[in-house]
Length: 623
Image 1 (spheres, rainbow, N blue to C red):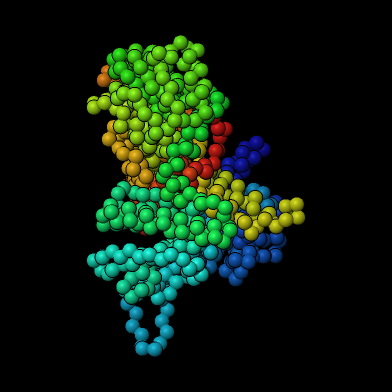
Image 2 (cartoon, rainbow, N blue to C red):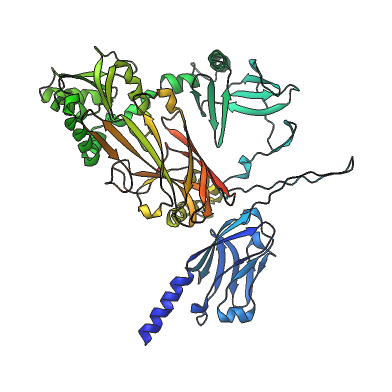
């Protein structure tokens, strides 16, 4: 009987610790439920907290409210407390109250978890006031707790003209100023470029010379050409896409930036701040872009890692040997060959000549392998970038392993596509096309882990140093990190959607900005914590099509899967739809910035994030 009582009590404790979700209107009250009946006969205190911040603490009959919640917490009556009802009422809800709340017993055991979402008020309509009177223009916005208020910029506009904003005016260094005018349907906009010693200021003005927006262009920011008539600039969480009427206008704009950059450097030299001219951001980003991507291949230890990935290497060998007729007596180009293992596979399939291109120091080891295997007559190593080397002849097949995390990281895919200039008509590319898959997931443990990492910076006396001033910046950095790991498919909340890239047709410029719209029909209720990504590539031969998949249902590869968290989880029910877009925008670190925007269509709740694929968080041991 004693054992039965103990088990029943334990099961009850487990039951009341389950997560609950609440939606509350702005300004209303919310009841945070907690059943502490299993603990009412024990002595001790309990408290409510929101992600480490105290809401209310009850010790005996003494109640202490957290600073943020003073005067807004209503505790249950003494009778209810004796019965084990530890629910509290949080009054006059604010948008910033959207958070995860926990009722904790004796400071260590969580017995109730509540995800609380405060609904943003919808304000629209007309206001009539007498002339000369003041008017209150209502505006509500939800801000992630990880976002610094210093980064928040708000504009009120009238007929497209800014009348008030939170943006600080900065002193602009006098320098070269040029303007480009473009006629739009509603008004003429003027683009002003002001060059200083360290950066260039872009200002867009309307016909009344009122600033529509300003943008600082420096060498530290990400920028790229998108197609022939657009230019994408990304700084922090803000991206600006300038679209020109003609390619000539686009080239003129690039020349203006280059000229301004050179002028700034000349001025710096006259001021003796720099001893030589720095490369322009275009030279750094475009002309020298391939250099960094090849560094991964330069070490034998990295090549060992690649070769030991059986799923990857064996799939390549199978794809080539199964389609032996595509390689026999053919000329093959191996792009970014590394150890040249794909070149050896091509020879095994009967290729008469293989040109192995490698720009990193690994090329000397590749040459040693070719010579030691007595294949110098059939495999020729071309040292250099594929964009610069000269292939002695056109080839029948191009092989490469250019995939990175989420298929595109490291941007070797652009070199793979560039090599197509050496491909004969009707030639083959291995791989032939790739699919990027994405799906929403729910994983509270992962979300809490990310918050816990940032809590390190809440310490106020680490070796006598207060770190808390960096907590907000740390939170923002952690949430900008894509998470490289693997997971159980049960965390996925809907069937994946995919974006296909045909390597036989795509151009390198097509990969600079990829927008993937999505609409998911949710197959379960719960919190959407983010989007999961993986990819498949196909080797389309004349005899057989072979697939290499990095899906969570397939054997693990060195690419794992990648998960991107939303700044704020979204609650959705079974059958509801989650829609939005994923924008992959190249940066100058041989990678991509990931812009995610998602909305639960039925409730209107929206969340998003901007992540840096170059700086992922490895949640499991890397290869």
